[in-house]
Image (cartoon, rainbow, N blue to C red):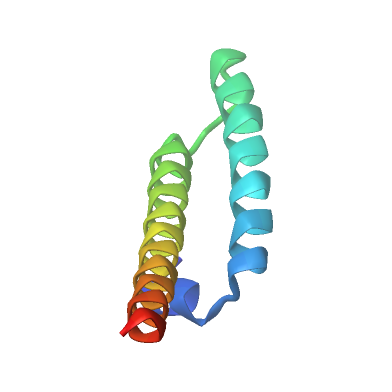
Length: 77
């Protein structure tokens, strides 16, 4: 998944997608242990996709906290 695709998603959609990918990783690991997984690169790409999505979520949360703090400071002045 490309980073621009992730940035286009809404936060609640990202959270849902992260949960789906984490379940997918569990299934991939299980298949790998049973020697049924032929393309082991799927594990790596799934982990990377999850980390990209979590990074974007953290960035959004940090921006929201920053704007909330600025609004509070602006109201006090």
